[in-house]
Image (cartoon, rainbow, N blue to C red; front, side, top):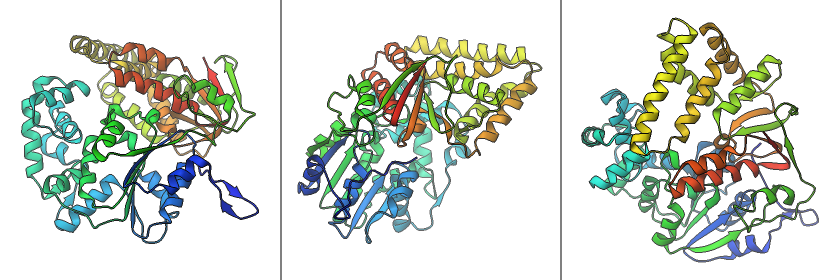
Length: 460
């Protein structure tokens, strides 16, 4: 369920706003930053603000937001993701260019140096050796691949008749192409912007820019978002800050569970419920979200629900990731024990590298724990294939009982949230020495809890 908070005055049939929201609507500064807590009604405020302008641009974090927002904007407005806006600039300036999201894979294969080159582009493409080393360490790629990655990035950018997804932003930036002028630009989910997206903003002439986000919902650092995005935007644009601290989604009883992370969050909504339950005794209602920090927790629950013939739905992206990780070892193994031994060998090899480099191994541990939870519950390779097939069937399910990672549940809300193994956020937080990674573990906990409209259940 995608949130659509509105405050309707029945007697006047129009939206009414809190003082915090009205202050934003009345603001006139050329650059403002709205820090909006979960469920604070930011979309309604932005749509009201949009009514004041005849020529505006709404930059959205993903296609789902574009779909949700597009019909709500006034005539004369554009709503684009960063990639689609960059591609439009390319077509306006170089009409014969073709798009191929697999460009670098086709040109250079799937070596770590290819991945490093693409990540470095997204992180701003700084040419310094120190910058390349930072990118390599952040994405757990050996610095030995840097010379080859430099060659790949240079060659890929030179092959300009075809653009990859990341180059949709890179070419307008490097060529200094400018879009049409806009009266105002609204930038949603600004806490998750990466350096390349921030640079693209320089290609958009505007009289006013409004950044909206929640510092405590920044959870995409693993993908390249800038942990300092909001701080950088404040410095770059000299923004005036406006808070939206009142949540209309979550009851105050639920918000009590995240006050240690976001002390200022508040709500007038009461009657919420918070439960503590064991996995052995929990019964999941037919309509709820079940979320977890770890893949293994969701996989084990999927096993149970499939065994009990209980309906649920799970994302195709989640299942396809499992397929991709298991595909080679299943094809090259004669029996299930060889599969287990091969995975253990891969795990030991990777963990040795991570420990030598002092990299954060949390996501790698989670990946292998998920895979082991599958192969250790199956007695044959055929059973593994059967389980994956059953999981795949549930990707097409219409069941409102949804199994979701915390990244998957972000942006959604529902009456009842079940949070599996919530202590894993604190566990992973204690495993890293990097400040922004510690903060993102707190943020994951906060995001999971603040999806609840009525009840939040911690399941251990």
